[in-house]
Image (tube, rainbow, N blue to C red; front, side, top):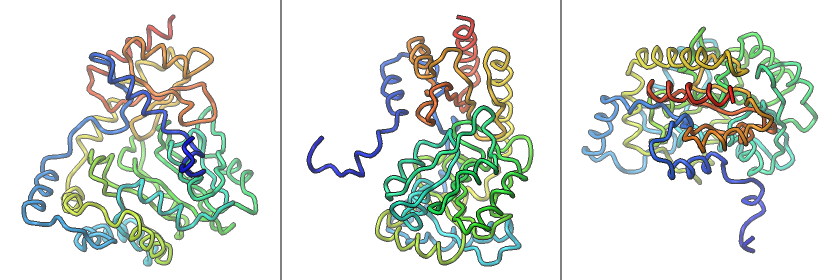
Length: 369
């Protein structure tokens, strides 16, 4: 290790997903079911609004909290969704990842514990460790349910935050309203910060999306346009919650990300007016296609949201199974990247139908072997 590298940078590995992408680069015409972003392009009217912003000179820094028209539109949306909470403030972050990092930096002290479900989005433990916090994963196998009793059992005097993600990456599982309510009320009762990562809230297939913020007005909600509008590279997220927490996060954004890219923020205004019903119906159909194609040969939980399925590998090691799949030209992600267990693998069904059919066929063949 180079003597200049900090303990912080050494405390976690690079994302294992990158290794899959490196392997993918060597394959000709791979069956790619690994990508964690929509397979449609940014809708045309959003691209046009952004081009117009660039051409009309809106290329400088924006205010740290975001351009006023976008903030006002988001504030109106939040006020409508949470009419019972009239004091929620909103700001524009540099992607939801930026929002997550700011939430950790503004609330987690060295030694504080942060609870989240295992399997988890790869960034969670890394962000907690960057702040000197202690990651506390709560095992949610085999059904990946948000179990309030397991959450309560993980709480100690050092617990500072509970981090929720529904619909979830990598499982696609959605938490029930009753479980969210129990956890939200538990956090309020114990005076623990509740952060809700809602980046997949648009991709909710079987019932209405419910945020824990409905049950706990101190919840910090992180959302954005990356997944819903395929704007992953544009870095426009937003955060809303109690005014004093938002002020602390904004202060840290000023000294780190500065602001979200201004032209993309003008595109985001148009995104708020763009209907996603057609995309949502298509993704529900893709979800059903992959579940019906695999559920008789793989142990899997039907995802209620996002665009992922997290089946159990037909061999002991999920990582070994993924190596075999990649050698056959199928790109999937080993479950041990998202978990302390090595038993599952992640499929993304954000792919063209032809790719899904090819993937199902090969996965069925691998299961039979």
